[in-house]
Length: 349
Ligand code: AOF
Ligand code: ZN
Image 1 (cartoon, protein in one colour):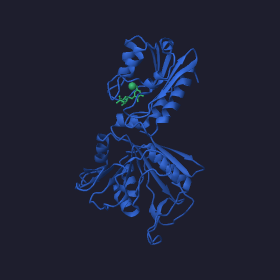
Image 2 (tube, rainbow, N blue to C red):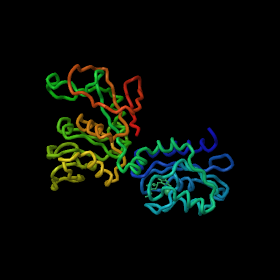
Image 3 (cartoon, rainbow, N blue to C red):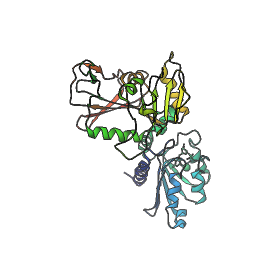
Image 4 (spheres, rainbow, N blue to C red):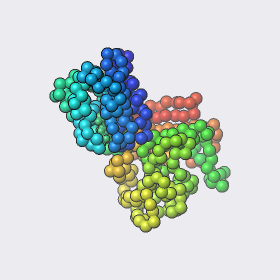
C-alpha cells in the first residue's frame, strides 16, 4: 500500500461513521496531511450538514499549514451549491496545493466538474486512489445516480432444506416460526438502520403485523414501504403508527385520518416493480431492504432488479412448506459468512 492509498484508506474509515445517517448524500471522509503527519480529519455526518472537507479543514489548528498540505478525499470535492457551498471553493480559498481523490462523484451536478475546477485553479490533483473501495463504500449512492433506482437488498431466512415457512397445516396457529437466532435478529435490526427504506408485501403485514423499525440497535428507523393494492392492511397495524413515515402502494388511496403516510397509486395491471422503483427514486430513496414475503422477493429477482441478497440458513428442516425464492441467474457471487449460517449474494451486471 503506497502513501496515497494509506490516507484514502483512512478517509474510507472515517466516512463509514456516517453509515445510515447521510442519506440522500454519500458517506465521505477527508484527511489533511502535512509533512507526513495527519493535521486534520473529518467526515460527512448528515445531509444538510457540512461536507467531509469542511470538517477536515475546520479541525486543523494551524490554518497557515494548509498552504503546504495535501487534502485526501474519498469522493471528488463538490463544485455545486447544494444545501452547502462547494468544497472546491473552500480548497481553493485555503490554497491547499495537493488534492488526492478516491473516486469521481456520479452526481450529475458534480461528475468531474469538481476536479476540473481544482485543476483550473492550479491544484495538483490525483484521481482514482483505491477507486474500487471508494465506489463500494458508496454502493447505494452510486446505484441511485447511475441506475436511477435505489440499491436493493433482499433479506430472508430459510430452513436447512430451503423453506421460508412450514406448511400451513403443520403450523396451524400461524405463529411466526423462528428460523434464526437472537444474534441474527439483532443483526437484521442493524441492517435496517443502514438502509433508507424497508419494504414488505401485503400478506406479510396482514399475517405478521410487523413494526419494521429498529429496536435492537440504537439508530435511525428506515422509511416503511408496504404494498397494499386493495387497502387490506388494517388502520391500527403497527406500520401505520406515525413514528416513521410509511409509503403505501395502492390501487386507490385513502386520504383521511392517516398521518405520516404517503399513498402512491400504481397500475396493478402492469408490472409494478418498475413503477415502485420510479416512485422511490422520485422520493430520493437511495437504498431499500426487502424483507418479504415470497411473492415480493421473487418479483424483484424475476425482474433482475436487486443488488444483494442476505440469506440466513437455519438448522431446522421443514420438509414441506413455502419454498424460498429461486435465482435463475448464473452471474451471482455467493459468500458464506458466520459458519455457513449467513449467505451473502452479490448481483453483478
Ligand atoms: C463532497 N463532500 O462530504 C459530500 C459530498 O446538498 P449538499 O450541499 O449537501 O450536496 C450534496 C451532494 O454533494 C451529494 O449529492 C454529492 O454529490 C456531494 N457530496 N461532496 O465534496 C462530501 N457528502
Ligand atoms: Zn462538498
